[in-house]
Image 1 (cartoon, rainbow, N blue to C red):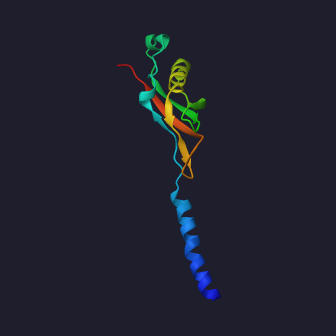
Image 2: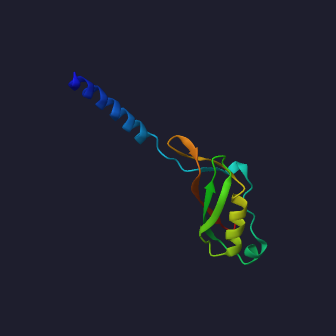
Image 3: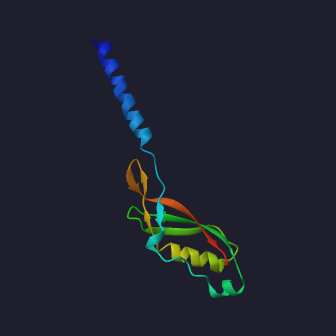
Length: 115
């Protein structure tokens, strides 16, 4: 009797462990259509400044930015500030943890280039 009980519990425990392993965490994703792209600051345009700024956005469960920071500068404070200010207004698809919306950081690169 004890042997059959143990053998039926083991597959059930494996099933629970497998379902936890399959519930992967996902990072927030920006909805680029939900906001205006950053505008080139006048002084940066005149000085022909370019570069890539890497930003971090803490996204709440509602998809709104809770906090933001520059992780790697483009080399121009005005370009960094313009990108951070504009893109912080974007909506995101929230990240998930264990299948539920969760507050999480998203990394976003913005490339400033002259055309």
